Length: 104
Length: 245
Image 1 (cartoon, each protein chain N blue to C red):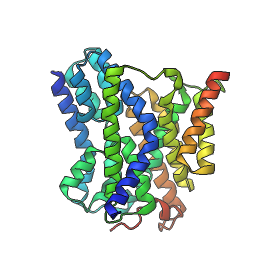
Image 2: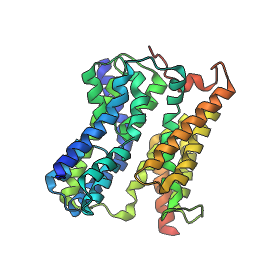
Image 3: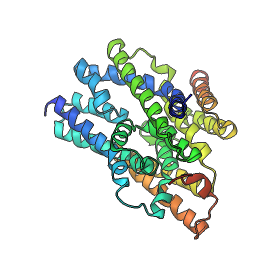
Image 4: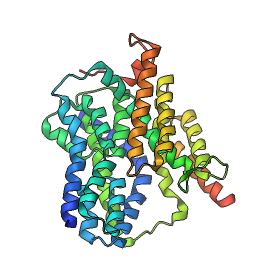
């Protein structure tokens, strides 16, 4: 298949998925149960992205102190919990990671 | 300032911390795409046609391995399945808009536009022009994605890997998710999704992410139902869209 056709089809499919349920939503009433379930999408999806980024090193779960990203992530979680400030969270996580990388 | 502009700029501002992670990511994509043998125009246009970071990286990888086009297209579909969750999640807030608005906002609905937008809606509920928030966030991301792709194509991987700037992305997600965890069902949803994501990590093509998210959603919903069968749980006030029609 031609690369342009691949990109075009890939783009159409991606758009289709993003559009699908936004488009269909007006056509039927959303059950209360589904609405409740949807409120758990953000914590579930975000955590499912975060956990592997922190825990998985070289394709396996790494719980050791040498896992700098996990340690820096814990620092960031603490910062987020204490300050609820997005910049302070990112900054403390980045600084923690760089310090760990340079000094350990 | 008009209401539209206020929401638009709030969306733009919400996107700025994410750009610390997105911009180098876009540059790396641009550099890798050229190395993988894509033409300059194909590498650049993928960023607007597909406009989905992880799918673009995987496409680049598959193109370099000369994988058949049909397989690449199917892979893009699976990798981007999670966007259906985002679509479902934002649908109630966008229900009142015209088809054209819905299409435009759907095109802009990436991970990084979805996350601040859904948090914004959960905090503020639906106001007459709150969709301008998603427009602002989405356009900011789109513009930066195009520019960073172009820079990556021309400069190559200019940012040293030792800076670990890619780590800013998960950190941003941490900053977003922690404040949402204000009750037990939400915490349980987050932890269970995260743990399942670790176990499901080996499932190819990001599919583990979908499985993990679905488990988290199920756990949260189940616990909320058990806490209060009549739906008066403490999470009600923060997690259900306020001011919804």
